Length: 358
Image (cartoon, rainbow, N blue to C red; front, side, top):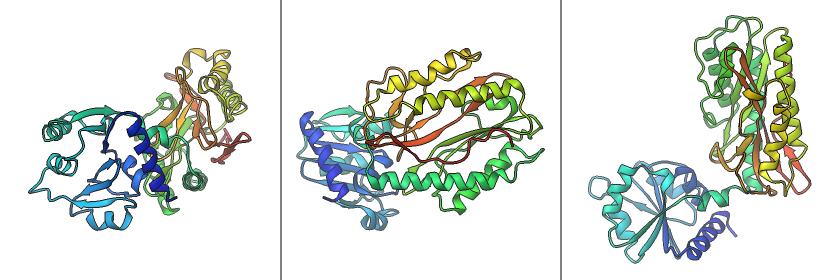
């Protein structure tokens, strides 16, 4: 069965079991997952019988070329609102779900006014639930993205020198990923020096590298819409005893989690394994809370590896394992790998060495 038809069939089954006659999909990544269209300015209406992709003249030809198992509807923006178009196409549907996480309140208020007379139910998790187990094709895309990131990092590390700025080094890394075939960047690259490395999601600045600085690099490439996500931490020069101890603690925490990564393992238990190592160190109060997340068309998607998540890993889950310690005014260390859960354990997708000293 065509992968898109299979996914649409799964969504239809979920809709039927929940009493919905159709669903309006706004999230571009979710639309791509369900029919293959990779553009924007699109809305997907899927019912028990039909799948219709609504777009305008800017993406119409592209949608016709890319969309599979979906009828492409050209909406003239000047003469028909999106709400009216949805109302017209869903005239026979009285109970509609919509993925509320991907539309703002103002837009939905305008659309819903033209869908009066229907039961409209905000819904999150339908498509995300399906996306958490990846197909071989999806895994291949993430594996390729990780390979690009590995090579781009190796090339960029050759440029590390005293006086280079965070921003300049980050731009070089982004450029190299795209020269190697990445479709843009997985997310805004995080590249921080010295005490600024204690900012888990800081933005690169004009801060210049000095001897003895920690260097935290968190970045990823994109292939076929699928993202990689890797973090490495280095020290420029000889590490202090404290820096070495922080790094060793984080590395040991990561290894403790990887040792338990397999199908059937509970996400909370995986998180606890890494957290226990950090809690038994001198840096317990500075340990990050969560361990990782699912990876795919979204950078952060199900399953999440953190406390409170009731989910056991399955073959086909692609997740990150990324413990970290962040000490204000000192610096931070995070190590992150991408792995795919297999029937026999896991496969490592990221392969850049975890060398500490540069």
